[in-house]
Length: 510
Image 1 (spheres, helix red, strand yellow):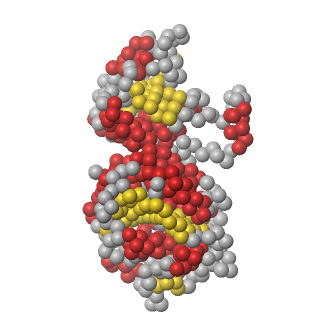
Image 2 (image 1 turned 30 degrees about the horizontal axis):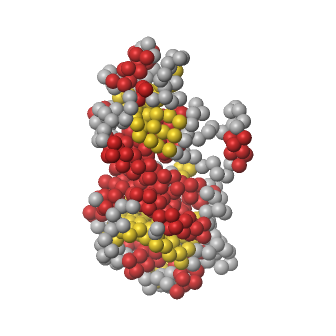
Image 3 (image 1 turned 60 degrees about the vertical axis):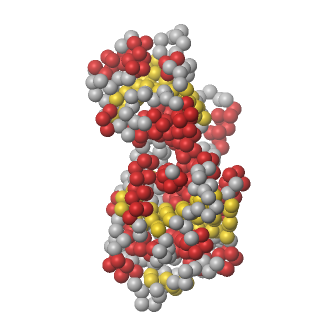
């Protein structure tokens, strides 16, 4: 989607749809909304008086402008909610709501006004608006060849035709053009990064294989000048990454360890690492999953997709910070070669693990990846993200990820980044007594600590492979995909936590 900034009077913009935000309550109209109501001969005021519009979030009301006037053809009043509690997320949601209404009307472009009296910093509001627009417009259409063909042929729109994508958004705002322009550019890049993550999530496992993720990484490296390293089976064996190899043993698809380096800071400056689980399909291995819903296991690479999406935005905006993105990627299938429950494997770090359950495979590939990152790059901080445990969904549902780590400052930074991105996370403890659940008489530890505190024991397993490095883990099992909870999401993969990671990186970059 193209997003552009306009400092013109929003009512002077020629466009098929202009969205005007309205606060809740009796005094919720902005000056521009009052002027628009005058153009409509008070029709909107009458609708409000009748109780048909109250300015609540995700509420809108559409009017058609009188014919023959040089003004927007349609005016959409969009609710912002309570003025006193307004946040950037409310702006993000309102713009997304407007984009979705344009989509329902089969319009390919629209304008949205950002009032000067929002109560949110103008640059912050512009960034959030760009994110909401780009994210709402995104849709996965690349495998719907028949629908695309009808669109390209220019056939008339009827009930059977797909809606055309919304391609252009104008943000009508007031403020310093340079500041607002940079905010728009940042928001658009953050959202485009998240859209890449979504696209990879949505691609089925017969397309989005470990080698496919490696190809995407190579393309990013070529486009943005990243240093890249892709490790295949031979290199993984040479590195002693037998945990990754054990997980992929039942599949014909070769595993990969993907590394992208952005060196935007001083050559000898600190480096931070983003690590994402890239399990492109998880059947559970010998501990096979139930058939119902197994098709969603293509989303088990959501952490890896988020890291690739974050690296795209980092390449686009080139922050003055050193960042590496690392994705261990494999399939977890079952065959005569597959790892069996009870097998003991030796990880890259030298620790042995009894595989009690082959469906607890994500922590195995992350163990080797974390060990590799810590030993090879000596990062100042590491953040990993993974759809790791169903227990996290039971604990926090679908509105928050779990965050666990060995450094309270880092955990707090991620919570604050999640609040800014509205990809919120909540801390769980890593108390030592939980570690006993991983004790194993035959190996250094086992890969499953039982049903109690499953999210905590999974994170404790990962903590065994980071040494004294500052580290935090995001369990995104309940937030990476599912049914939408905001109008800028669609059912399926959400791209979470791409923007959370980016907010954290930008905070580190200063």
